Length: 269
Image 1 (cartoon, helix red, strand yellow):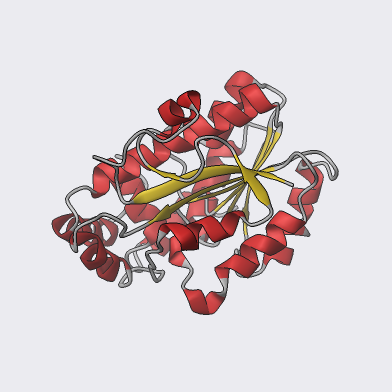
Image 2 (cartoon, helix red, strand yellow):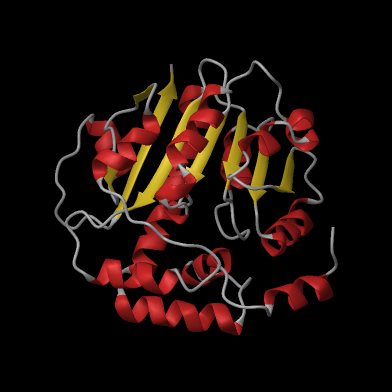
């Protein structure tokens, strides 16, 4: 683990998507370059703060459902970003103190901050690895140590897949991870979309491309393809907010007022 001085030095290199997201959530783990990029995104897309906040709320709702109602005790959060409010381990371990959580991110600064936060918690760990190399994640010693093979896992890919353009074949990357999960596991995905939105969302995507990652909006059919070989939990794949209310109704009631992000939870077959 690196010290605070090296973390600060690394963060001064330029805007980073994890820290820009942290800024939109009201976090403190961001730097001037991140805030400048965030301001440009917000100018193009005034809804971005609400979108980030609602996305984070969904993460908590999904984790509560999986830990509380489904009984999942192992969570693999890929693209976890900076630690902020409502982290997966906080939500899961409140309901199930024996829950184990592995955070994965390719940004060394985000991982370093997470490791500092998680040091007192033996049931959580943060590792540096890249979704572009699924085997690197699945075979990582810390993953093998903390997550027991053969027991169901919640694979969380929240607000990350839109940073993987088509030429990286994200469907195949997700399939590699999904196919390695035992029966009873669940996949959780949120993904930015332009469906039903103004051109502002596309303009904001262009700003994101000037940070540390590309940004690709996808329509409902494209996002749904990440759930191949999964049975979607009611209400299926819906635009946020409202997943929790829709889930309890067993259906999606309306798209009016929905934000440009799809969310879904699927049970691995």
